[in-house]
Image (cartoon, rainbow, N blue to C red; front, top):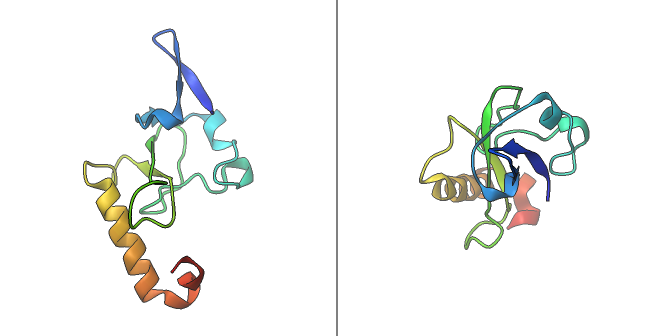
Length: 105
């Protein structure tokens, strides 16, 4: 579990799915296997997070019809229907970009 900061005297983690403010330290961590923040991006729009941005971890590993798993979202893309939009995005990607996505069918 990656601990982010102290909030109100308590440790918080990105896996609690609560929005958090990105710090310089977050930028340089390994996210999704990419060193030095290489893949620290929004899973919908691709925004590369920078210090001061708000972002949130979205748990999707056990979500039916989702094949890409968990992701981070930016404040602009976040909302109550984030999981449904991600599933629609995945389905569109598998249809439109079938050749690149054939291993995810």
